[in-house]
Every structure is written in structure tokens, then in C-alpha cells.
View 1 (spheres, rainbow, N blue to C red):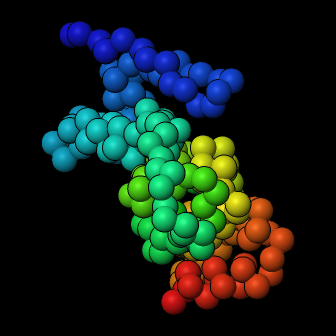
View 2 (cartoon, one colour):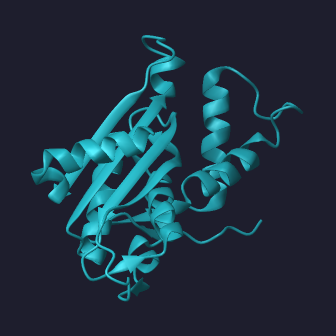
Amino acid sequence: MSVTPAKPVLVSDEQTVKRPSREQALEAVRTLIAWAGDDPERPGLVDTPKRVVDAYGEWFDGYDADAAKELSRTFEDVQGYDDMVILREIEVESHCEHHLAPFLGKAYVAYLPGEKVVGISKLARVVEIFARRLQNQETLTNDIVAAIESHLQPRGVAVMIDAAHQCMTTRGVHHRHVSTVTTRFTGAFRDDPALTERFLKLAKG
């Protein structure tokens, strides 16, 4: 049986993690199935490790993507436009680092252009890249803001994420219909309460 060689994964600018082989990942899923009390070799489960590993490859492909690359193609001719650019209701599908459970919701992203603007699809892509990693919602919010600030040098950035966490609804306290809201404001959005309020009103329609 051929074994896929381990591949290093960039977690941050300072840290890399050696990625196990695919066969090691398959065996880990078999171990968890057995630990749960079932037989990983029974017909209904024999192909489950492959499906789980394939799903992980999709859910966490943000580790192989580069937000800086998405934001690198900017435009400087904006015909004097200097008001906020806002994207509403960007789908967020992520997993918390504490239980590997999904949290699902919406992101609202705005920035005040300085000398650069970026295609609006790139902002949605940045949200997707960071969402497809393991973290908490607060970190996700901060990472989106940091990427936009670093590469666009805007006059301000505003991000709000409203998401429901399955680690809270399917285990533990079992509270459904509860969402978590995180916000981060920089530059003019942080310094001007009227601008912050305008963002929040536009975000929620």
C-alpha cells in the first residue's frame, strides 16, 4: 500500500506543522469509531474513514490558501469614491478549536478605502479562507480585520460575525437558538461612533 508523504502545513508566519499521511489520518478515524463503541470494519462504517478524511480536506482547506494573495490585486482608480464598502451576509462555515464542532453564521465586512480597493469577491474569499481553519470566533474576526488592514491600508475596517455554535447546541448546555456576535473596528470605524452605528445599521438592514 502506498502512503502519501507527510506535508508541512503553514499555520502562521512563524509556525509550521508536519501534516500526517493520509493513511495515518484514516487510522485515526478508525480509532475514534472504535473508541465510540462501534466496529470500524462493519459494512456501514468501513468507508467512513475515507469520507471523514475527504471532508476534513474540504472543511480545512483554508490552511492551504493565502489571504494575502487574494488581496494582492488592487485597483487605485476609484473615481474619487471614499465612502465605506460593505459586504453583508457572507456565509461562515467554521469549526471551533475546542471541540472540532461546527459554528455557522454570517459575516459582515466593511472598509473605508484609502488609495486601494479590491474586488468584492476577494473580501468574501478572505472570510472563507480564515473560516476554514480551527479557531474561535474572536480569532476569526481578528484575522479578517488584520488581513484587510495589512494589504489594503484602508482608513478603517469593520467586521461583525453572528454565528451559532454546535458545541453549545448539541452538547454541554444544549441551548438552541443562541448566537454569538463578535465585532472589531479599526481606524475611522473605531474613532467615529456615528460611522460605527451606520455600519451596524447597514449590516443588519
